[in-house]
Image 1 (spheres, rainbow, N blue to C red):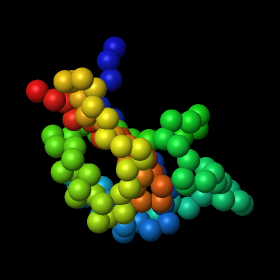
Image 2: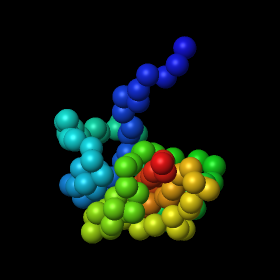
Image 3: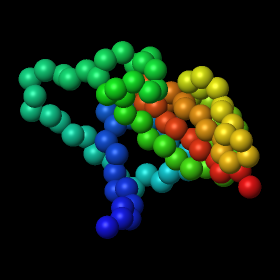
Image 4: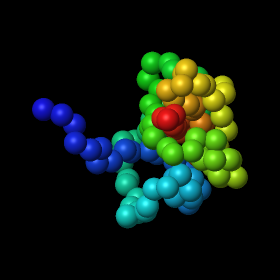
Length: 113
């Protein structure tokens, strides 16, 4: 049995409009919008927003893109900041991590031809 698709990712943010603008610029389409209220009496914190991208408990989303450097440039006005730098893996891939809205970590990968 193989995975056929990813249906959704849950990301909690304070500024939903900024998060939507960031992911729309990345190339996603907004299909719906809803506010979810939790019954928990206390808010749950995932910890500091400036954690490294590769520690236990950190969640991220990764996307394959056609042009990694162009994608990074388009996302910067939406608050994206590189975590480290763009890495090149021989003649195979470019890879980077961005810190997006609310500290969400987004990985980008470009296959080189």
